[in-house]
Image (cartoon, rainbow over all chains, first blue to last red; front, top):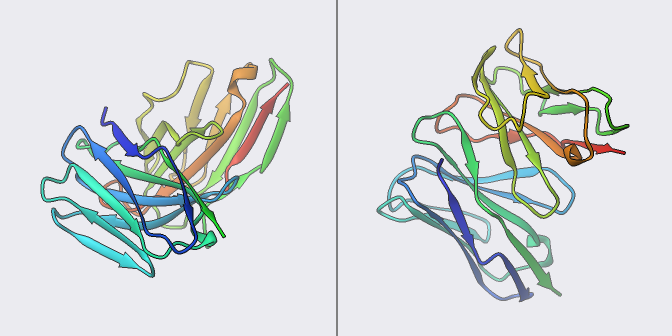
Length: 111
Length: 114
């Protein structure tokens, strides 16, 4: 199986602060996806990264995939209470069968 | 439909009963996945289909769990002789293909076994 470790496990920040969440794989990633889950709700797709060194941004959220394709980071600039939730990274297995999720990072933004 | 639809939204059943959870994927999506999610944890893979073929069922906890997708569209996850430890949120997702294609999730079915 392909394990995805996320850090930190939880994060509490003051509104307006920047933050970074990391996702590390034990194997080369063939596709890395970021999802957000609000408490008690479904998973919302944020971004997909495929190429080493790729970076994508949407509003105040930027995701990067390192050159070796084993680590991704999600950076939120000037956090807002609406950013609160659980952030999950996910990846295709190299066999193209299973889709794995990371351990999750719980984000709380204090107004 | 516009998104992945799961039913029922909530299911309460007594221990020992069988339950069937339904997933209606996004039209045209080839791949369909079932996950189970405990509170505060990430989704745990159960099984996955390409069209009607079950490609991987290695995540099913035991033989009380089964899934089918007979016509390559709607899928049913069946749990026989439910136990209290089966209580969880069961999530279905679909994707356009099984590779390099994001999964789109339904709202899930909250199963409670009493």
